[in-house]
Length: 266
Image 1 (tube, rainbow, N blue to C red):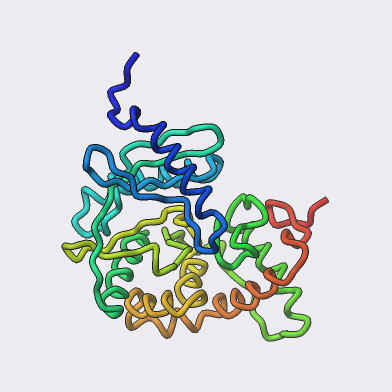
Image 2: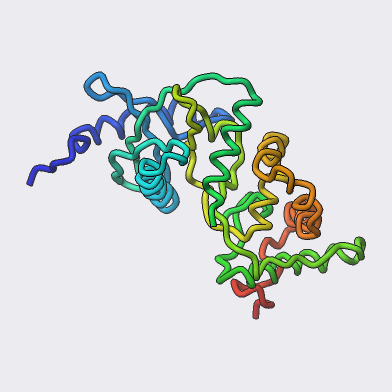
């Protein structure tokens, strides 16, 4: 039975174009699995990746685009028109959005507005290689894991405080605060491009994303937290997380000998 989806007829061409792109550029350090693609004189953007991880990212962006479209205060999220799988890869045909160059000061303000929208009431950079070593069963399990690292560090830093996140609210955040994951469209609306690392996190981890990861994220945090910045930055959780990040990056046992509940593995 023929499909009513007009993009189905272009799947083979998309796969071929992406394969050519991968063969030509995959050795580059800044290589990304995305290409511009034209269908009947209309520009689109194609992203692709391993199905085990990229399928959920594409579907998340698709849902966010629907929510953002109906909210005048939302950042712009490019529409995902078509998602399909071929062999071990998933492909997404996405709206091509024209962007404009703005000053860095304005750009930071726009990104802050997008982050604030996301933060309305796991992956994270604190982990080695940016991926949690265990599929934690909840915030308490994650708290136990982080405090296992804190207890190791307290041998030489006795003043380091235990981390407390189990009772915190969860906030939606972009854990990958890279400049390239945001832009501004011709109307001045901020754009979010990458949804691979957007998810719900305890508030302290979300705050650490902004205050403990990069100078760009720190600039954005000034506009996210406003007058409350100093009190957020003074949290003992953030100081301990900075130390834990270094500890986890240097350690050879990613799971610290714990299970997914944060208890000693048997």
